[in-house]
Length: 126
Image 1 (cartoon, one colour):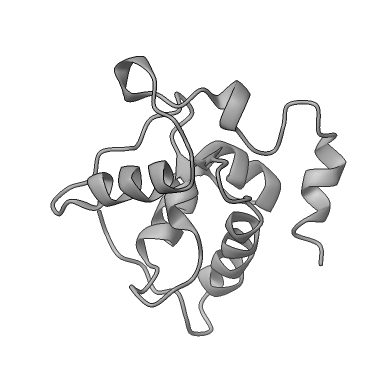
Image 2 (cartoon, helix red, strand yellow; image 1 turned 45 degrees about the vertical axis):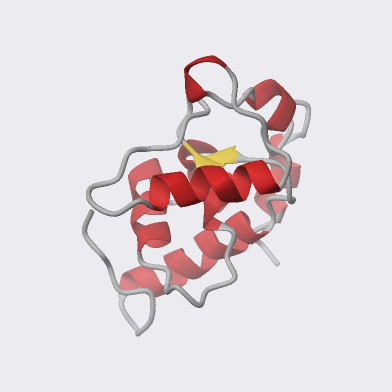
């Protein structure tokens, strides 16, 4: 996966900050999808959320592990073992993996389906 700059004055700097703010809002023991974070953030795609998360430094406190694909699975990455680290981190938070290593998005997904879309959008307006 390509690494994109997370700092600087480029057009992605503000977008990445908004993505990180949305991801930081995911509570411990819950997960969200790249697509949901993109929708909450606005003006970006699920792929851009992935790029932003891949650009995080090792020292970052953004809970990147709480973002999975829309099927509730950890997305495969090229090289490294970050997918195993992601699973361990999620399991440590109480997230359970079911058949096919999928997370039940109805149980662990955030925001809840019942959450009004305007409420989730407000997370990025602060």
